[in-house]
Length: 209
Figure 1 (spheres, helix red, strand yellow):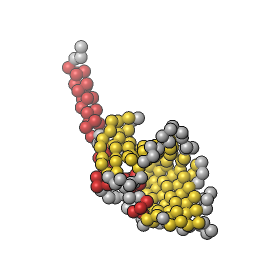
Figure 2 (tube, one colour):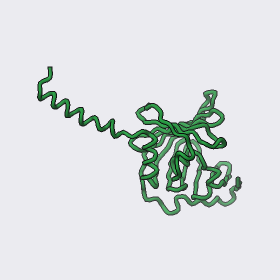
Figure 3 (spheres, helix red, strand yellow):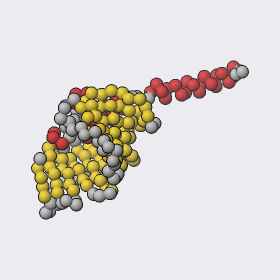
Figure 4 (tube, helix red, strand yellow):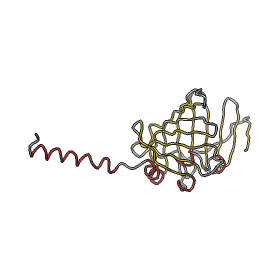
């Protein structure tokens, strides 16, 4: 049986632990805080895509950076090089193996996409129907379904940890699932002035969409 001293120690320990649960914001709140407080970031990613029939594509890995509003750099390094850069008005997708650059306006390429959720600065609720999901894998989750029928994907689930996005699980209109894990995120770094500048390499085939 606990004596008075032990009971006081136990009560103090419970009070110390209680705020952890009370202050733990849900994933949607963490996302809104991330958008409001983190104007730029850099980090690393791994990406795995699985088709509806269970077949998986080779995993990709690389680095990313962004600066609001609408500037981002998504650089695949393995197993092959690929680069996606947005300068705020145009999104460039460069495939070195094909020596091809595809250009799209930010509105067409980003719009109501996962990139808009993480890298944009617009209203989350205007573009997406947002709902909470149960915690799993040590992350707090939210579900975002685009309000536009032509968004190109059915929904994306986003897992947060310590107020930073840690994982995205996106399901496209073909039932294909893409999992993206983000790591080593640095919030509000000083990025180079030309971080989001892209000039098509000489001789590359440029396709404007």
